Image (cartoon, rainbow, N blue to C red; front, side):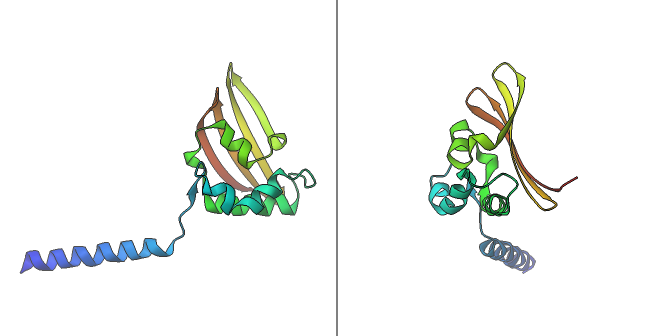
Length: 134
């Protein structure tokens, strides 16, 4: 009887945890082909030279992208070129064939950075950072 109650309690806990996950919208991996269609309006704004990196439009598009896309899966530099305008990138050389690539969008007192470390054509690290402007 005791084993049955423990098993029932475990099942209820697992169902509760699983049910909680159902309500959370999962983010797409950045290299998923669906990113380019699901976030086409945001990508179009980020690539539009009419808007500066400090515009409300680009900041809000970047914010929606950060909420819906998991950039920890980024492995190919071409993915960055598909999503962001390379002219918005700040590139900081580290060593031969290594650099940091930062796409920074700001509006008002908010800043959103997409930070990537690159070696050759491979993205080796990524992070998305929200912060207040200094």
